[in-house]
Amino acid sequence: MTTPLLELQHLTKVYGGGFLKRAPVTVALQDFNLALHEKPAKIVTIAGESGSGKTTLANLVLGFIEPTAGRILYRGTDIRQMDRHQRRQYRREVQAVFQDPYEVYNPFYRVKHIFDMAIRNFNLARSKDEARAMVEEALNVVGLRGEEVLDKYPHQLSGGQRQRMMVARAFLLKPRIIVADEPVSMVDASLRAMILDIMIRLRDEHNISFLYITHDLSTAYQIGDEIHILYQGTVAERGDTITVIEQPKHPYVQLLINSIPVPDPDVRWGGEHILTVDDEELRSSVQSGCRFYPRCPYREDRCLQARPPLYRVGDNHEAACYLYAEQSVQTNKTLVTKA
Image 1 (cartoon, rainbow, N blue to C red):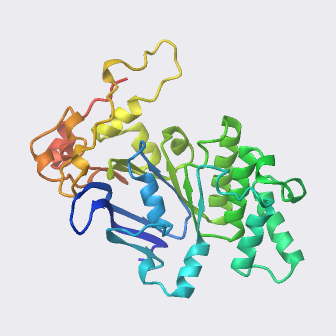
Image 2 (spheres, rainbow, N blue to C red):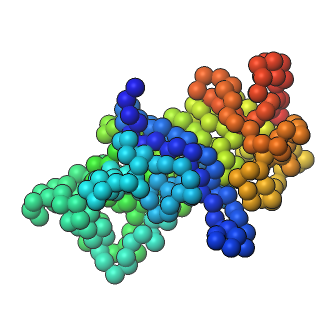
């Protein structure tokens, strides 16, 4: 079997505690596993509500923070053990597109500065003409032209233009993976569709994989190949995107899917079936049981004794719920999804 391009092994991040253990402890991410191969490229969605651990995962992969436990392997090498050359290559091949398309720019520089820095830092071009050709190629991929945008300041561009510029800057470096943290949450619907289409084309035409961080299951459904749905730092369910969203198995994921409004005026939205987000009392220790226990209609005593592992519930489909621990339970006890 080939070595994965990116492999996350039992990745855990805990905040608080420390030497005197007086600070409150929050388990931001616990025991997360993922293997992403170089070919074929995929869009892997990391989904969940605010505070579920999505951005923590993105920051770990990008090397902005250190894991408390677990490893991040790139081409088989732990990123914490990389030498200078390997780390430089990793930073080139794993790029990021962030949520806010304005804060990433320096308002005192024209927008071409972000391309000039990338070309200079990674020695991508031997002349100004070669550099300009590379920038134009990257801009064309996202539907922009250099003569229209490069000499402007960030405030002179629309939010959609700024975000597409960031995608172009990432593409300029010819990455293998782009970590896209809520890249369409701050643009309007028409530009959202354009950026999502760009992501699909980069996957299909340039073999670039994405870790797509989002709370929006509708966009995940549109473009995602695989999905990992997080709840309070742990994976509730994962697998093929369409299967997970159309046939959710974990009680939390079922409630999450059912909370999406249906575009039908005759269907009542809300009411007694919509559950609020629980407080995070079970997130203060890695030894806690199922964090959905206080809200789960199917809870059992064993749910508090140990966190349920991921059980196979179908082809490329797993759910972290004891309802699927035994084959007899899996086949005879079916969760009913409310309309």
